[in-house]
Every structure is written in structure tokens, then in C-alpha cells.
Length: 251
Image 1: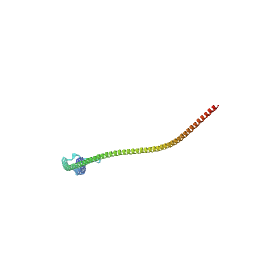
Image 2 (image 1 turned 60 degrees about the horizontal axis):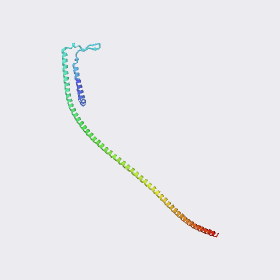
Image 3 (image 1 turned 90 degrees about the vertical axis):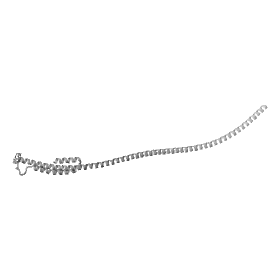
Image 4 (image 1 turned 30 degrees about the horizontal axis):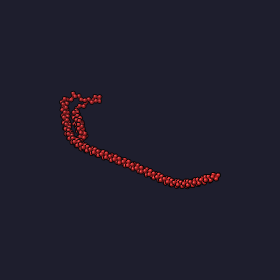
């Protein structure tokens, strides 16, 4: 009977852990309740106190010989033990039936609980699936926003690069203008120096022309004086020739 109770408890534990945990104490109680019946059967089968005590040989008690017990008494004891066994089996069967009914109720409750848990799990799974879909949508939107931000950043970098290139071009233009202005100032200075040199050359040429004119006037005067001296020399020669001719005629 204890084995049957243990088997019922094992079956209950295999069917549902919670039902087994709740049913284990009751099964143990039923086993404890059944144990006294077994003890009663054993005590009823044991020989009555009025029988003869076994002999003692060298400190050992010897069992009474079966040949000394009358057969009707053995048959009566067997019938009595069988009746007690049948009564105990009926009681155990009734307890097992009650346990079966209780376990069937536990099975129904367990099925209901499994269904409720399954429904709750399906609801939670649906929520999780919906949450995952929302999260995927948010991630996709975040990717789109990130891509747009990257595009804006690239455009900003491109505009910044173009602005830097424009600034560099402006600086180069300013440098070129400054170089041109410096070149123009240098050319103007050189032109002023050249004009001053030209003026100085003009003045020198004017002075030289005046000197040349003076020299030409002096040369003209010298030529005139020389011409006058030549005429006087010619007149003197003519006079000398006339004197020579006159002297010759006189001679």
C-alpha cells in the first residue's frame, strides 16, 4: 500500500509539479494512515499472547513448530488475515479513488492554468513582437535620420570646402592686387626717376646746345677774323708784289 501511495505521488509529480507538491503531504498522510492498518494486519496475524512461549536453547528463542498448531486455528487465522487484508485493500482503494478524483480535479485546474499561462504567454509574445516591430521601425527611422544627418554633414563640409577655396581665391586675388599695386608704385617711381633723368638730360642738352651755339658763334667770329686777316694778308701780298714790281722796274 505504501508502494501504491508512492506511485500515485510520482504520477502526480510527473503530471504537474505544483499538483505533486500540494498532493505530496496528503499522500504522505494517507500512507501514514495506511501504515497503521498494515501494522494492525501484522499484529492480527501474530500469534495470540495466550500461546505457548518458544523454548530457549543456549540463550535463543526457538519458533514454535507449525506441526503443533492445529489446522482449524491456522485456517481461522488465515481467514481473519484475509478479511483484514481485504478490508485494508478496500480502504486503500477508496483512498486511491478519492486521490484519483482529487488529482483529476488538479489535472483540470492544471489544464486551466496551462491554458491561462499559454494565453498570457501568447499575449506577452504578441506584445513583444509588436514591441520588436516598433523598435525595428524606430531603428529604421533612426537610420534614415542618421543618413540624412550624414548627407547634411557632407553638404556642410562641401560648402565649407567651397567657402575655404573661395577665401583662398580672394586672398590670392588680394595678394595679386597688392603685387600689382606694388609693381605699379615701383613703375611709377621708376617713371618719375626716368622723367627726372629726362629733364636732367634735357637741361644738359639745352646747356650743351647753348655751349655749342656759343662755340659756333665763336667759330663764326674766328672765321670772320681769319677771313679779315686773309684779306689783309692778300692786300699785303699785293702791296709787297707791287713794291717788288716797282723795285724791279726801278732796277
